[in-house]
Image (cartoon, rainbow, N blue to C red; front, side, top):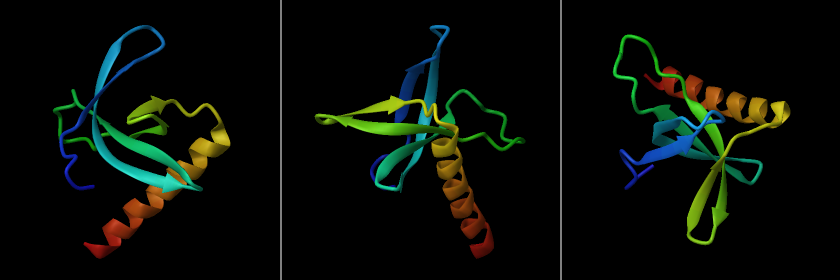
Length: 92
C-alpha cells in the first residue's frame, strides 16, 4: 500500500475507550474492502502484534471502519489474510 504509511486510525470501543491503530493494509475479499490494522500503542516488538480486521464502507470521500459481527465473514477474511502471510513467509 503506497502513500499511506503511518496512517493512524482512531476508534472507540464499546466501553467508550479510544484505541489508536496504524493502517497496515487494505485487502478486498468478495468485492468488499477490509482494513488490516495494527495497535499503535504496542511498542514491545518481542511479540508479534495481532492484526485487527475491520470492514470498510465508503461514505462520500471518507471511509467508515466497522466491526465484523458475522463469524463466517470474519473467518473468510482472516483465512485470506493468513494465506497472504503464508505466501510472504515462503518468499523469504
